[in-house]
Length: 235
Image (tube, rainbow, N blue to C red; front, side):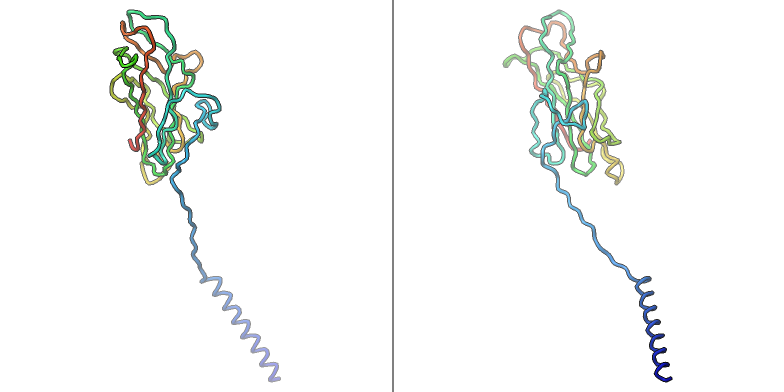
């Protein structure tokens, strides 16, 4: 009998200890671990996108100028457009306006910094020249109704200047502004990712890129002027 009583007591004690141990693990046990990720600023070139379908890379030849992004990791001016205004037989004693023959006039900017600091682009046109001689005095390039598009549909797009006048030999003019973030949330910044700012002519609408030459300023021959597009961080 004593042996049985000892066995029963031992079993009861074991059950009590097991129950206490189970409750201790269920109520009071916690642990902490870490999740870690690291990003580097991208230094690779962004492919030039199709201005009519920004989700696609450009597959055909383009009328692009030259860009230098050697010191702009994460913020880059990927493409700038040449503007050709064609061969014109008319030299008249009145103001003349010529539409661009460039099929797809656009520029492309990429902001992959992850800071939300914003950015802006200005443009400046030098004097038209034949050789070393300045020509087309008073001429100006006019860009109107520009549109900003991106490939992923970011909700905060840059603000494109709707009426840009670039006087030959004049000061730089604002082209597009991407505002910085308005709070601590990166998504509130404009111009994140890759953006195309275009002046594409649609259907029978008037050209959005034109050259205006004053009366008695045109002369025979080819006239060239450099357009300088400048991308700057901030607004």
